[in-house]
Image (spheres, rainbow, N blue to C red):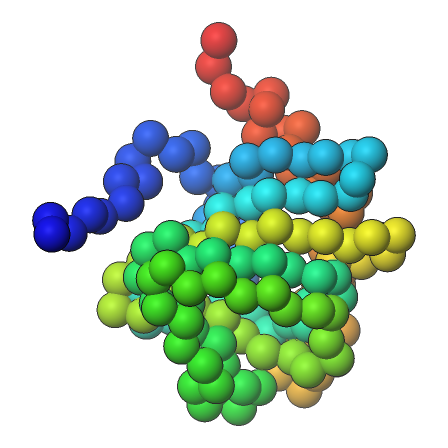
Length: 150
């Protein structure tokens, strides 16, 4: 069987804040009525993104690489290989995420229901730094759509 490698060159990646230089996203679809956002996240190889909590249900599918989850102290908690699908409910347990030996691409289907907050961003002492809300993703999606050339 011939191995297949996902080609992400045609995707218009957007930098996700100043958390980690290689942390990017593209919003594939935003369903305002049912409050579902489908996003591809690109996590940098051998790095960890900002500490956070998931405040919404997330369905994930690893498209490329290894999706790594880390404890608050930086210890590896879980490795999700390419092709793995996970359903993760909202959780009080903070963690970091990152890529394995290569940049990792993960499809997230974020389903907040009636809750507004999707993610809570934390500092290393677990103090809240900010939130990512459904409205945040609506605004990012609008900006992404406005930047697409005709």
